[in-house]
Length: 112
Image (cartoon, rainbow, N blue to C red):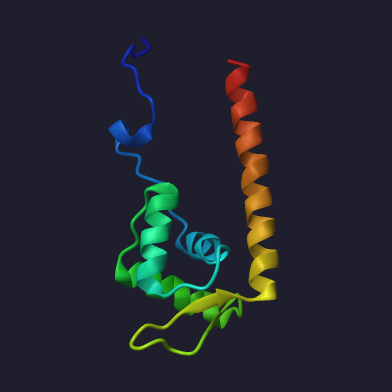
């Protein structure tokens, strides 16, 4: 028997928000260079996900090792980062994949 409970989104089911920390960092930096705290705030505003410091800086470290982002000169005690050209290409490709996934998923829902 199907539940008749109305669910507007997955939040009430505790499914959580979208969370792919490296992709979220890349998307945040697409609007310009930022330091860690600014990224956390931007990501939370963008999709409702709040990254903790360990998650954020783990993602930053991996992205820097992959040369998808690069540090800029420090501003006081803050370390800003920016996308590299490779990072921009990777972000475009990942978002295009997500776009195809969303389109296919919504199409399947319309068929129900």
